[in-house]
Image (cartoon, rainbow, N blue to C red; front, side):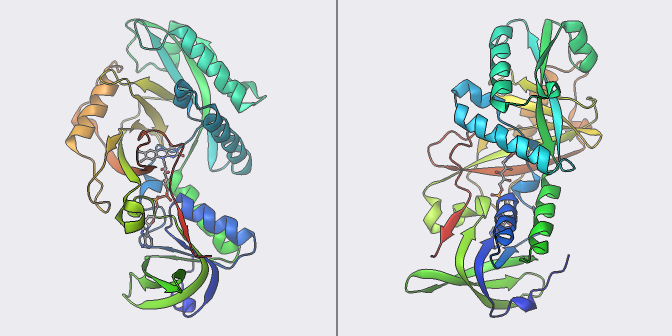
Length: 349
Ligand SMILES: Cc1cc2nc3c(=O)[nH]c(=O)nc-3n(C[C@H](O)[C@H](O)[C@H](O)COP(=O)(O)OP(=O)(O)OC[C@H]3O[C@@H](n4cnc5c(N)ncnc54)[C@H](O)[C@@H]3O)c2cc1C
């Protein structure tokens, strides 16, 4: 990928996008395809923050049916369908198992109704994308890693998986192809204004420490958790941290949606490049946005949640890797609820 900081000198752009995670990458790609003259800058590497630390799912959000957020689920399922069709090499179907145990919070009938509604909202005619019921023996054959005690059976349903970082890289490559200037290791250091309106920025090459000015008609901030550092957005930003552990392989090609016994939260075990992704947590984050890390409490919580279900419990020494990310929400909305994400701020006219 050609990275040419020097060519930006004194150029005028229709759109400057600040932040090279998934939102910045899509924005730059979309705008460049529409014929706008676009530049996107990213202070680190592409997708180096939350956009490479997600659960890697393209999902409708089955759990939001519990809060009757049908509009959100329906919209997400439409986007899932579009991505499965437009980028089958990057977004692929993934089936999830949901075990039914005696005395669990949600019974078989409730799960059946939820999954029927999920299929209906997805509107997919392909039977491969519909849910199905498995008796205890069939369910155990699909997921031999699970404890069979008190297992009443279970469902499987379809969602989709991606490689989040590669998806961002592909969009950046697409933006470049469509004529955008895409510069990583380049920080937006200062906004330039004219009559109180932002009309450009000072950008700083992180490799050479050189600076230059560029002008832009519109500036979009897709800076994720860095929004919480800005005066304008600090008031309404709520941050929630989520971590994942990379664990040994225990699944074939199907994932599991499980409920943590300690607090009733949903978590996933997902097949991931021959290993298992276990996550996520969801805790308030008030620390330094540049230093988001996995801590012992996160690890204890996830291992305990998984070990409630596993035939052979995992130990800390089984952990192969881990990563943490931060979600941004409007203040006063529940942390796990993505209905009102404030991921970008447009400045200028
Ligand atoms: C634990 C967890 C699991 C998740 N799972 C899923 C999932 O399965 N599916 C799903 O769809 N979503 C999921 N999400 C949500 C999704 O990951 C986020 O919504 C998304 O990654 C946010 O992308 P972003 O582009 O807004 O932010 P980021 O990826 O954080 O990108 C912002 C970028 O801005 C850059 N930046 C900041 N300041 C500057 C500056 N001054 N100059 C230049 N660059 C700057 C940063 O370096 C950073 O790379 C999950 C989130 C979390 C935390």
